Length: 122
Image (tube, rainbow, N blue to C red; front, side, top):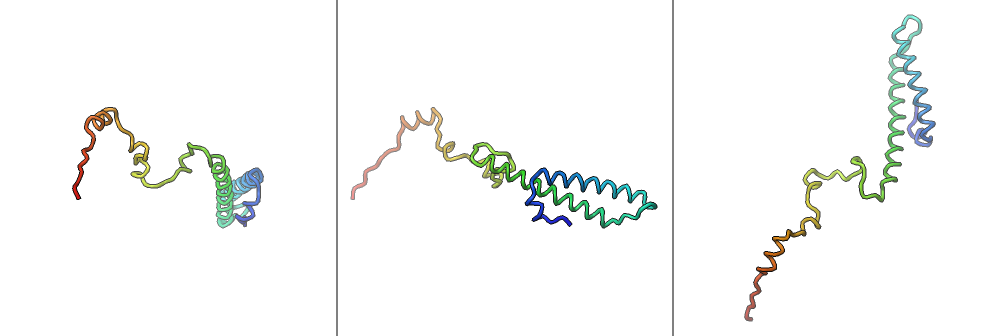
């Protein structure tokens, strides 16, 4: 059985080699299943190989994602899977800067008609 904590210690090349070895073994097992008269191949062996392949692919993917996170850590534009999910509405919401911007027409209107100030007697 392939242990995930052991896989995490290996580098990516070793993982790919192990993956190819398991894929070849799985292909042989499937062929053996078809030609069941010659050798008896258990379904559990095929299941075990499939699960082992999945574990290796998961670890490879984790390592690649971790590498990508480091690469894009201080960059402004990030890949979509690294961006903050939030909600659809929150992602489309105007930023503070965009909200504070004024059009030329608004600026003219505000400057020609400023807010009135009222002095109250105490």
